[in-house]
Image 1 (cartoon, rainbow, N blue to C red):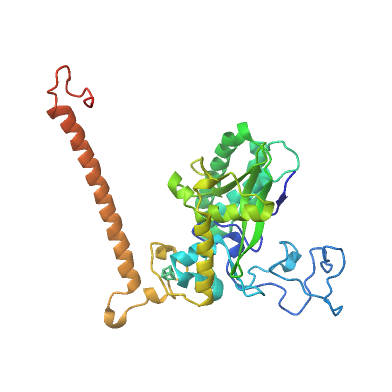
Image 2 (image 1 turned 90 degrees about the vertical axis):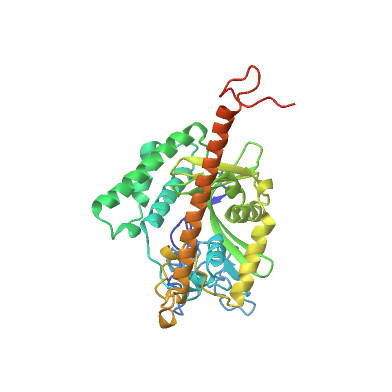
Amino acid sequence: MALGSGSARYGRRMDEPSPHPTEQAGPTTGADDGELPLGSDGELPLGSDGELPLDANGALRLIDVEGAPPGTFGTFEPDTPPLVDGQGRVRLSFSRVDRYGNCPRSFRYAYVDRLPQEPSPHLSFGTSIHSALEAFYDRKLPRMPTEEELLAALYEHWDTSGFVALEREEQLSYYRHAQDVLRRYHQRVAPTYRLPAATEAWFSMPIEHEAVVVGSIDRVDVDDDGRFHIIDYKTNRKVQDRRRVAGSRQLAIYALACRHLYGALPATVSLDFVVPGVAITVPLEELDLEDARQAVLATARAVRQQAFEPTPNRLCDWCDYRAVCPAWQPGAAGTQVLGEAVAELHARRRELQRGVRELRELEAGVARLREELLEPDEPGRTPGSGPRASG
Ligand code: SF4
């Protein structure tokens, strides 16, 4: 029996480094027009007791946007709930914390100024794969959907918004690539398929009185011993190494959210890199939950202080706000602008790191050669026969 599920709310699902589905910035389209928010059935939403929500004076109490579960507002669901909730807590998510960490100015443009962001093929590809996988697992009966059914879900959920600027052939090649990825996924999970406890498990988790962290966990599994396992899908081409997965703040936040939702921390957390078809799983003990909590709190405090300095970084090239960012405006008297200087710095650093790597490989090769060619002096040892025994 599923513990709970729900599709991505408040916008569409995106992948790193862009905002979480719940964090798509843009103009609010909520019920701010003075009309009462109606449910999807056109009726006023009732309280949990089935009664109209009235305050102490018997007046109709408008629904608390932040506290209401997703779907409460039906077609009036706001795209972007307020950054600071009615209790003064900053509404964050992993994506928001991550974006602030990369560049506070970009955070401001996205969530304070709510400047629109361009859709992109990468984001639409990620959204489509996530939606298809959600349909694959969000089922009532424990029968694994066939490959055809999974591909049908992709067809149904294919998000075209990021592809509209592309030629038809390019669009098709993205679609065929997504089909390939899901075919391989189907083969990979077929031997162990079981219904999860939840898909797209929505959470809204207060942290002290400073912040509320919202988000949705792609999949929550429960094993035969009743232990929880968190799975997040990634649509990057490259697999992260185990150390990076263990250091993932996103997974640490999801682990805390698991406890918030179900009363227990997960036994393991995984990043499933669906494009290369590799899942990296780490036990809970390797996560730094306190670091994640502190990162959320530090971001909330900084947002409250309106600390939004531009911080040029390697993601500037993909930033939707570069045209308005002061770091990329022409400097006085033709001096080099900060953004360009930082870009140059990153390029040089990459170059140097590549050089150091090559040097290390060369050193290792020379050491091997020396071992094989110059030290064949022990009785019974011939060149290339391996290292000498020690002791
Ligand atoms: S262009 Fe770079 S520095 Fe400017 S807002 Fe974007 S990420 Fe920040």
